Image 1 (cartoon, rainbow, N blue to C red):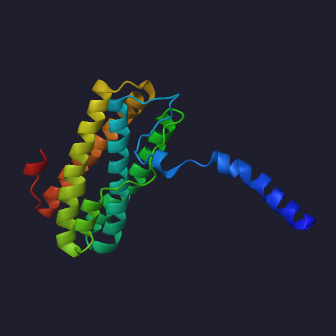
Image 2 (image 1 turned 90 degrees about the vertical axis):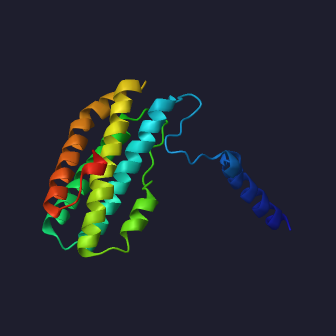
Image 3 (image 1 turned 120 degrees about the vertical axis):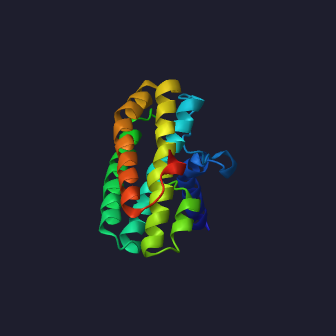
Length: 189
């Protein structure tokens, strides 16, 4: 009996730190650019982190789809380029984010990915270039320009300024690819 009580007491002592440290599920945040109370991130910067990470995650995941579902060497090359550059941009964003700000690992736009998944070949290429290459980069450019103009965190603004030329180059590459494939760029202007 004494041995049983000793084991129960030892288990309770070992479990106490875990129980005291546990965070209730209702207080956990799933917001992309969450902050700590000691380190709040202003709203424009939160929007930027959310938009930038969603864009990069979507680009990376869509590029993976392109490597399997496209038969066009130019589309595959573009996708490889996007995957590499957006992986680097994600790392740079994480480095620029203030201490305590959680930058999401994967928050892809599932509606875009879901619309691409059933497509193959030329049909995939057209949708990929329109939705990810053109429209996606157009939206990303707007988010980066908004951070440069309205962001309040100096490190995030610098990261946006540094990355914007790369995003603009991606948009130009997407326009060139669209022209090669006969995809209209009018809606993405």
